[in-house]
Image (cartoon, rainbow, N blue to C red; front, side):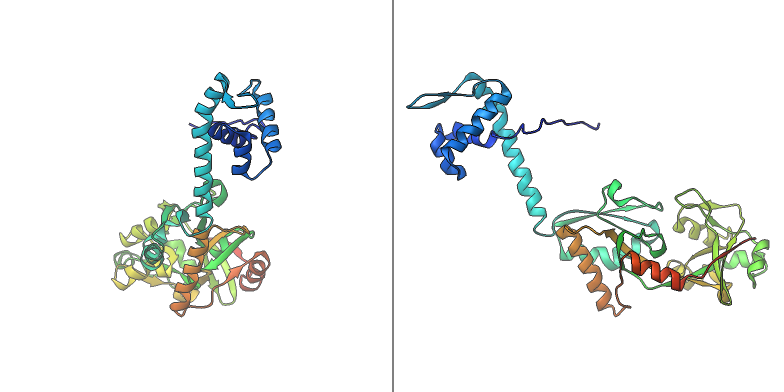
Length: 334
């Protein structure tokens, strides 16, 4: 249950001074401990008493004692202030070294791939970081969802995010099972999809994704039809393996099933390129060490694998890449 906390402005002012005086029973020794003047301590305590509306100390020229109100205030304020100090130390510690929980939102289709190539090695290198992966086909708002970073295809990343390439560009390939292709004539042209059952993907915004192709130098989008709709690639891939229809999926994700002979490529001359996967995160100046360590780990792993150079994207470079690499698209219905 969500709670609303309201703290009056200045409510905590003077509490540390009060606790120090209560501990030492002396304004002068409290001032020495806190590195301020006795006058400053006295003013802070008086201001606190004024806000509370009750005297907290009994002062004489020889001693300082607590009133009943002061005793009760000390009983509740001391453990609360100690918790605040402890919370500050924990937060400070997380800001100085890679530790704590790193929350990532990723597509379901790449979880196993990431666990093998990236997450396992990161956890070994940084045992004090606890990695939490939320697998979802939806486009998640990182800040609203409380995530440190996300992983998505490059074309779906907002322009105000920093993006680090994880994988090279890859083909979007149309695949079908040998059993399905024995029952139906193999498509040779894009228009042949009219005669086929196509497995479709529902996007997180509710729309059905068209299929993308390249016909010569022209990039086109085709609205296909079929009796099965999924909201993630693994489900659609499984349906294709079961012979339920043709599916258009990223080739690296279908590679295992194709190697095993469970799926076969079709319409290869018309396959188009997708930009690949990127790690993305808000461009905050104060990046937490756990995220900085993960970003550096991603870069080092890519470099050691001799992959194409890591791309650090900002709004200008991403717009320039889109303008130069993605021709205007025409929509066709099949």
